[in-house]
Length: 166
Image (cartoon, rainbow, N blue to C red; front, side):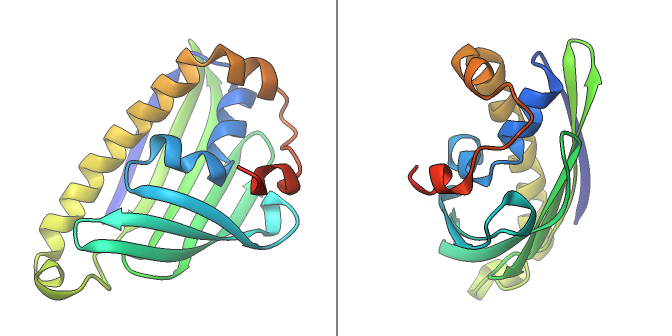
């Protein structure tokens, strides 16, 4: 399943990019993600993560890599192992009332066990609906969290060492 979603966010583009490009924020806004751990890498550009998710079929672990990174503009996360292979490309651009966040993604139900594998088209529809809800949660968090905007308004990502302690 391929999907394209956009949402306008009332925050500076640098704040939006900083939040969405930080995989460690995912448990706050991506409903299936329980935790994220750094596996390898020293910066967001070359990092590899373990993303632990709760799916309808049970818990799952995906290994995820940053496969593209353009500061303040674009970040792509691609799963390299685990069920439901996915690629999520987030792009941020200036637009009223602050920033436009675009998500171009692909995900499949491949790797799901048992009956869920037989219901692949239905599972993919559920993923699409879930992603729309996740982006709305992300938007709400960013727009309502002025502390985040004040602390992380810089387009320079914090060192990964700080993120590992979350």
